[in-house]
Structures are given as structure tokens and as C-alpha cells.
Image 1 (tube, helix red, strand yellow):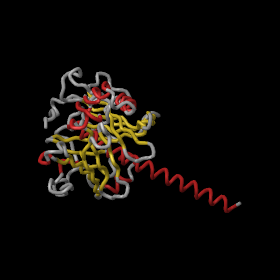
Image 2 (cartoon, one colour):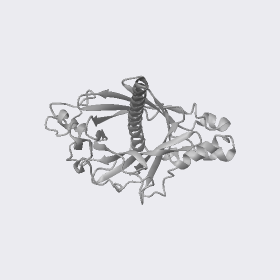
Image 3 (cartoon, helix red, strand yellow):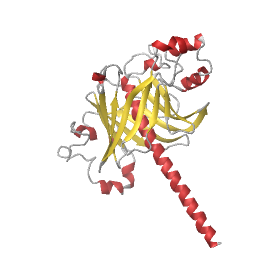
Image 4 (cartoon, helix red, strand yellow):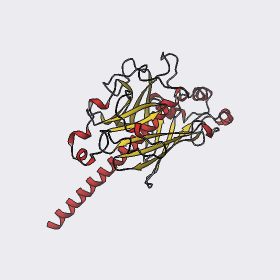
Length: 328
């Protein structure tokens, strides 16, 4: 696995965020889609890929279609199955690939041409929640499997993790315009910044309390909970190295898909955007795939929260209606 640039050599994106690619942006703008009448997701490398895939489904065996899809263009990147009735099991993420054995005869098969790429489990603690992402990069070589553990603070809007010796943070921002419901931004942290993941004991999926006693991010949870400002990002949570940004959009339907979220991920490996064909699923490196899977965790949590609020509103409306009816 290629090592990521260090903090001193990485380059970030502008902190000014919009639903369009950042000026000079070099990387991917992934689209997370919801299937209509389903809680599952499908991820594409771009909006254009969603349109191509929908068009190609009606002409999958045409020679031109097969040539384009064989290059990784116009097919989905990931299929996501949600687990609604489990307290710990959260997501199972399948990665699509080109099956050379069957592609020549029947083209791309969205049912069978995928394998279990990532499993996400969740454990809640007093101060934080851990999300364990278990990856299978090579379905034929289990020896290269690995895990990434995210530590999400239960009050502060930060989610920290370690990968290849570097420390990273996702910060949740509330809506700042009518275009999106929430925004998560990914940063490579300064080596001296406080970080939840620095105190991971590496034996379990918990933070070592003895070593983290002086960490201001932990403790005083009761005070933080009742502090209005605690739930909003602060400047010292961020760094100069912004690497990715997730937005939940006002959904727009394309055929049978609702395009609900966009994830911009900066390509840190290639010096020139002309070298990489970002419309192809083959272009997506492991570091970016990890960010996509993390974004799916946030997307799922936000959907669960939105559904709960909707149920509460419906229950309140029903109760109010019943009370008024009894008074008549």
C-alpha cells in the first residue's frame, strides 16, 4: 500500500466549500445514492457515472458499452447494505470489479461482480463511540486485510482516526446554506494537535484512560453536553491540510437513484490530473476508498437521526390531533 505524504508535504484544498468541484481541484467527486424504497446505498465515482450506468443498463451487451464499462467507466464503485436491527453491526460494503471470466459473454453483472470489501461495526462508550472498519483489499489474499478505527466524540463534532502513522480528523459542520443538510470535512492533523486516536490502546477498541488523562477532549462530558458552543467546530480542531469534504444535498433523482450526498476527495498521489482517469473505478486508490467508507458511516448515522426526528414529529402531530379530537 502506497504511503501517504506526511503533514509537511501534503497539500490541502480550500476551506470554502460548494457542491461544485473546488477550483483547481484534482481528485474525485463521489456520489452517494439512495435506492428508492430502500435504506441501502450505491456509490459512484461521479454524477456522470450515475447517468452512464443508468443508460448502459438497457444496452449492456453492445460492443461500445462493454468497452467503456471494461475500462471501469459507467459502473458503480460500491454497494452498501445497511443493518437496521443490529446494535453493533452497521454496514456491509461490497466493491464492484470487472469479472474477466464472464465479462466477454454477458458484460457487467451488478448482482455478482462484487465482493465484501468492508464491514463496519459500532461500539458506544461514555465519552466516545468507536467505528471499526474491517477491510479486505484483495479477495484472494486475506493476509493483507486491515482495520481502521474511528473515535467519534459523543458531544464535540470531531471524529479522529490513525492511518499509516498519521492522524486524521473529520469535523461535522451544520448546514450553512439551503443546499445541504450537513457537511463533514476531513483533515490531516498537525503532529502536535490533541487527538482521540493518539490514545488508542491498540489492544481493544478503547482509549487508554491512563495515558489520556491530560487530554482536554475527554472528560467533563456533563459540562460539554450542556454547553451550546461545544457542539460547534473550533479553529483548533482543524489544520491547514483539508483532504476531503462530504455534503448531504437536497436530493435529485436520476432514473431509480436519489443522488443525496457528494464527497470530494483530493488525490494526493498524482502530480497531474491528466494522468488519472477519475471517471473510472480503477482510478480510486485505497486511501480514497477508506474516506468513502467513512463517509458512508456518517451518511448512515445522519439518516438514522433524520428518521428518528421524523417519527417523533409524526407522533407529536398524531398526539396533538387525538387530544383536539377528544375535546370536540
